Length: 250
Image (cartoon, rainbow, N blue to C red):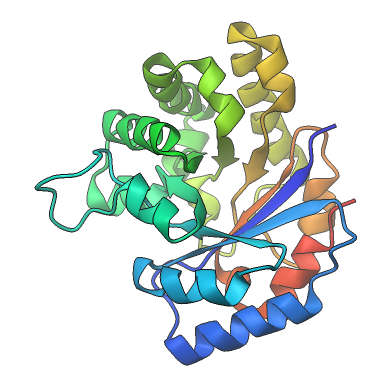
């Protein structure tokens, strides 16, 4: 039985005051009896304060990216070792905004993923198609290419220390959401592709859905056989909505 995971991605949002209040509300409202792990991925500058405020709580700390190198002359990058030093457990890699806006290739995403694994950070690997790719029938082809780039580099066994998030680009920040069956169909495909490489790994790996999950659709999505939780964007900035999503598990 795979344990559920709900991760908040704050993106480039927040102030010191709003972050403190959000975390206080999350800690006060989280039902620790629910069978779900919870994490928040904060902007880099807030991570030390977030880690301090969440110390001793059931909420883990994550980052929104991680470097593809251990150290060196890589201005603007943050290494896995730096993240670990501040208590970071998870790091998002390959988010569609990094791919589309900042030009991150499948190869770079794979390098970030591999470096996270090596450095002791759990990567949350995002895969997903654009609206144009979905409408042209290329969803499975695109997702497979993104997944294969990582598994060919790091090996299928690396998924024992990683999480996957299916995040269709057309359903991120657009108000559009895949139906529960559409999401399940791709999650099942992803698990099937992993199963071709290693059946045991496929059954254990957590696959999250990351396409405009909201308080009113979370329970239906999470009830699907291969959806193990969510990567939550905008709703993660609203403590009431995020807690409702977390509590929709089980």
